[in-house]
Length: 312
Image (cartoon, rainbow, N blue to C red; front, side, top):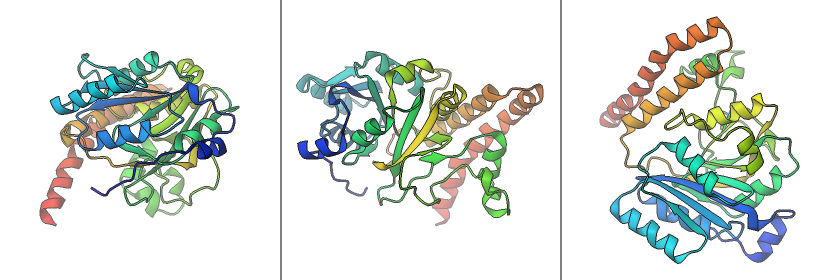
């Protein structure tokens, strides 16, 4: 794995980048489950950021070594709040649990395999002030080589756009590019812009906004809950924002969870999302008919990945 330096804000940096932000009210919520080697580095990045007054770690299940490390960290740093012993209750439910425990008026949700870059939280917090209610703002999610990661900024995810993106027809057929879900190959904007969907790897919400949309939908166990959250924010007349200057490196693939299990939950979540946003009888029927296709396609992906690796 490529080495990523832990970023640390100086007090001068904080003063320059966090104008109007109150560092006493920022809580980071991190859900942990069998994360692997990236966890310690991710935690160190969070605790090195002077904007963070509290880190709430919700442990859905860790190895014995990781669990011991988390307990020791919580005992040695008063900013760290550890919630454990509840088992694997799924990401959405765990994130809501962490948000309820957090004391911050601004909540930053961060994946345990994501590394905050200098000033990321300060940029998110500053940009979200005075925005319409409700509002969610996501950072620019990068790969280890600092190329923009797939999924960090996305279009509106519908059955049609998902199908055309998955088959690459949205990119290949003239006039269909508007259906492309993934925007990482588009020119990076030079300021905060409104987008339909951002990544759950790193985003910020005011507490009042998170509560206004009733947090994450706990009907999702793993994945797609971020897509659903963005959709509900927009449905309530709010805005979803992408911040190109708030950077986070997201390693991904470090979890010890089976890829087949992960993709299964993605498929289940996406099928559920399409059923939830259906408004007519025809849309409901189409969503139910597509559900097994979506789940089947998701389960096929790790099989294809394994075959490609063997053939390489």
